[in-house]
Length: 122
Ligand code: SF4
Image (cartoon, rainbow, N blue to C red; front, side, top):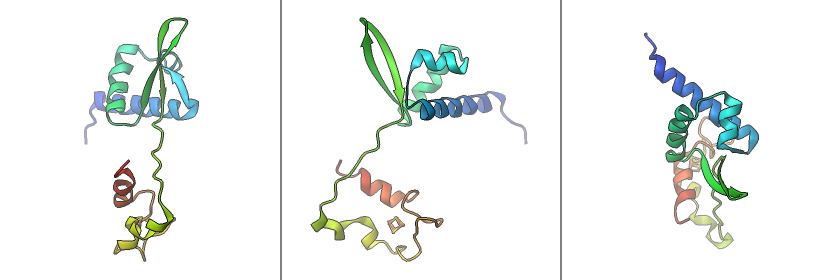
């Protein structure tokens, strides 16, 4: 199978951007391009896609009156579960609860029902 050259490069750049932000926790956009040795026109186009996909957050800070974009991974949303409402959690009504486990193929980390439930009403 023939590989699409442009696609592979974009995927590699996406991974490098995500890896660097994951490692640095927070990094200015300018510093990111410098560390990745990447032209800002190319990086910005890919970065904007990652932001639209919700994989990266970009915040503006003003340092000495200069606008600087800082990049970080999105802050995970936390759902507060009232203890008297624990029976309303998605797992209690799930038909797969007996085969779901932390180490298993079916697990709470990759479960879409769990993700949807956590993202609801936030
Ligand atoms: S994490 Fe998902 S699959 Fe596992 S019991 Fe809960 S809802 Fe079911």
